[in-house]
Image (tube, rainbow, N blue to C red; front, top):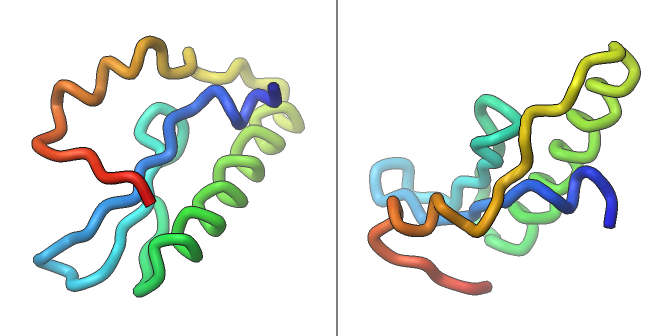
Amino acid sequence: MSNADRYAKIVYWSEEDQCFIGCCPKLVLGGCHGDDPRAVFAELCEIVNEAVELYAKDGRTLPPPDSNCDWLSEKQSVTTI
């Protein structure tokens, strides 16, 4: 398992923005968006991989990865793609 695989990647529909939003709260600020949830997830995975590489390049310690999916209790609904 790579370091990037240890972080939860979330894709959800935003009524306000009328698109899918991708985020990785424990690792990156911001994220990505688009009309196709699979494309948003693929782009998000690239962003997370790049973030992990930048941490390593800069000699910085990665933040603690997600554990036991604690963040799920904060979401009203969870959907799989």
